[in-house]
Image (cartoon, rainbow, N blue to C red):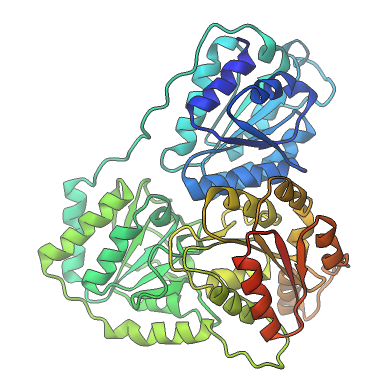
Length: 528
C-alpha cells in the first residue's frame, strides 16, 4: 500500500462515511484511494462549502466531519470553514494536498506554508512528511478533534509522500477521552453558595448541548424551579416550551433575560464560553456571584471571574449540582422570573395582520409553526440570524444551528446539505440574499446527492444588518446595497421547486408544503 491508501484505510477505521471537497493535481493518489474505499468522496463546488459541510456534520453528530482540498488556493478557500468549526467547537478534520517535498524549500507554483496558515484556527495540525507516520497522524487528528472541547484539526499530505510505499497500518479507534467527574472540594464550595442563594439562575451554553447534558439540566430546572437562559448555541438545552426557560439571552427587543440574570443572586453557567455571549451584558459590574461548570477552566475576564469553577464532565457536573440541591432540601424563589418569561414569550411571538409586509420576526414565527420539534434549522449570518437566535423557540438540543464564534456568512446552504445527510428529520436552511449567493452553487451538490431540504431565502437587496447598524450610528448607510437574480428562475434551473409567496396565508401554505416534502425547495420571502 502507499501512504494515501493507508490514510484512506485509517479514515475507514475512524468510521468516516463522506469526505467533502474539491479534487486537485496534488491529491490524485488520495482521490483514487478514496474511489476504491468504502468512504464516499463528495465533490463540492467550492472548498468553503466543503468545510461548512464538515463543520455542520461535526456539530450534529459529535464525530468529526472531513473536508479535502488541494494546496494553495484550495487550502485558503478551506480556511474559513475550518476556523468556523474551531470557534464553534465542532469536530472537523481537514486534509490538504501539497507539492512534493523537493520543491517546498523554494518559491514554487501555488506553494504556501499551509501548516503555518492553519495553526491559529486548529487545535492541532501537521504535515505527513514521512509515510511511516500517517497512521499516527490520522488517529491523532480525530482524537484531538473530538475530545472536549472539540474543534478542528488539519493534516497536510505532500504528493510525493502520498505515492510512496508504506509499511504501517491504521491504528484502531478508541473510546473518546472523557473528562473526570467533579472533585469533592469544588462541589462543597458550590453547596455553600447554593445554601445562601434565593434566586439562582442557569445559563446554558454550547457545552450543555454538545455534551448531552440537556437531560440533566432539564431535570435540575424542573426539580428545583431554576430558570434557564440559553446562549445562541445553547438553544434547546432546556425546551422553550418549559416554564423554566427564559429563551435566549437578549431575546426580543428588551433584553429581559439579561436583566433577569442581573436580578439573580447566583449565576450557574453550564458549558458556557464567553465567546458565545459577552458577560459584560449580564454582569456589567463584574460583581455577580458565578459558578462555572465546564470541561475547561474559565477564560480570565473582569466581567467573568467565577467564584467557583467545576472543571469536569459537564453532564456529570450538572448531576452533582442536582444532588447538591437535594442535600440542601433547596426551595428557591420562583415568582421573580415568572413575569419575565411571560414578557419574553409575548415578545417573540408577534401578532401578524394579513395586510402587513413580511418581516423577519413574523416569518420566523410562521416557520416555527411549520416545523416539528425535532426538525433542524441551520441559520446563515445576517439580520435573520439575530432574529432566529432570539425569537425561534427551540424545543430540542442541536435543532437550531448558528455560526456564532466566527459568524461566517455562506454557511447555511452547504450546512443544510450536511444536516440533511446527518439527521432523519426535516431540515431548513435559512439565509439572507447576501449569504445565499456566496455558496448557492452547492445547490447543485445537494441535488446531485438527492438531498431534500428547504432553503428559506430572505430577500431585501442589501446587507441589512450592516445597513441598520450604520443607520443607527450615522443616520445613513453606504456600501450595503446590491442587486439579485430572479431567484425563482435560479432555483428552477437546478430542477428544484421554487416559491415566492405574496401574503402571510400563502407563506404558511408554502412553508408547510416545502418543509414536509422530501424534495429540495427554495422559499423566497421579499421583505418589506
